[in-house]
Image (cartoon, rainbow over all chains, first blue to last red; front, side, top):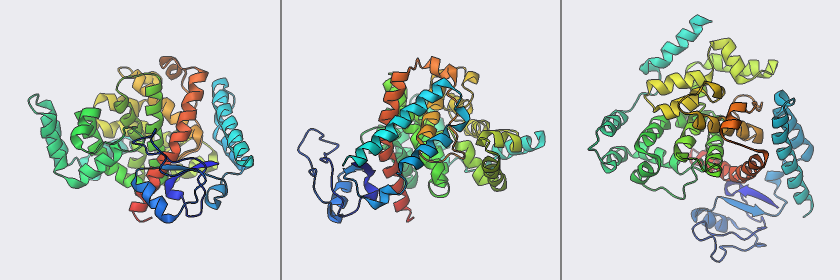
Length: 109
Length: 284
C-alpha cells in the first residue's frame, strides 16, 4: 500500500483503504477499499476536497524513486555533513526505520 | 567583499528593483494603526483586489496552516491577525515567482510551514499561525537572489555542487551575506512585524534571536526536519545541525521528535498534492 497525492492518481488504481469525507470522517466512506478507480471517480473525490489516497502497490508512477537502496543512499547524502552528531543520528535513524518500514509494507502486499 | 555586500543591501533597500508594496498594503498598514478601524473595513480593502484576495486565501488554505477551510479574508484576519494577513498579501507576489520558477524552493517553504504548524501544535505553543507564516517566509532571501542576482545565484549553485558546501556558505563567500540576512533586509524594508523578521534572520543562528526565541527555534527546527525528509529543494540537500539552543528552548526530546516526523511525513503527501494542483493550474 502507498499513500499518494490525488493529483497523481490514475484510472485502474485499486484503493487500499476506505476514502472518507474530511468534513465527516466518521460517516460512511465515500468509496470503499478494493474499488478500482475511474477518472470520473478521481475527479469527484478531488471536488469533494480529498487530497490523498491510499492505493495498492502497482502504480508505475510512484515506483520510480522508491527503490530501497536509492532511498537509503539519498538519506546518507542528506546527513553527510552532520553524521558525527548524536542527535542528528537519532533523526536519521527515525527516517531510516520509516523507509525500511514503508518498503517492508510494500513488499508484503 | 564589503563592496558586494553593500551593493546587495542597497539594491534590496531600493524599492524600484523589487516587488513594490501595493497601494492596498499601505492603506492596510495605516488602517491597522487606527484603533477605530474594524477588521471588516480592512478585509474589504484586501477583497477589493480579486487577484490579491485569491492568492492570499490560497496561501491561508495551504496545508502549511492546517485550517480546515478559510473562505473569506475576514476569517483569515480573525485567525491569523491583521498584520500577518498583511504580510501574506505582501509576500504573495514573491510566492508567485516561487510557484513557477523555483518549484523546489516553493515546496521547501510550504513543507517548512507545515512542519512548524505540527511542532507548534504538538508543543502547545501560542501564535501557531504567526509561526507558520514565518516558516513560509524564512527563505525569501533566496528568491531575491534568484530574481535580482541571477548570475550570482547560478554561481552559488555551482559552488554547492562542485565543493559540497552549503548554500549559506557559498552565499557568504560570494555575497558577504546569506539569504537569512538578505531576507531580513527585505522584510524590514517592507515593514513586516518583528515577530516575522527575527525568525527569518535567525533561522540558522538561533542564538542571535532575542525577543522571539521560541518562534525562531520552531522555524529553525522545521527547516531542519523538512530537509531531513528530502522534501522540496532549498538550494543544497544537506541537513543542517539542530541548534542546541532551539532543542532546549522547545524542551524537545527524542520521543517528541519521532512523533513530529511521523505526523509530518503523512502531511507532506497532502502538501505535494497542493503544490501539484497549483502547477496544474499554471498549465505545467
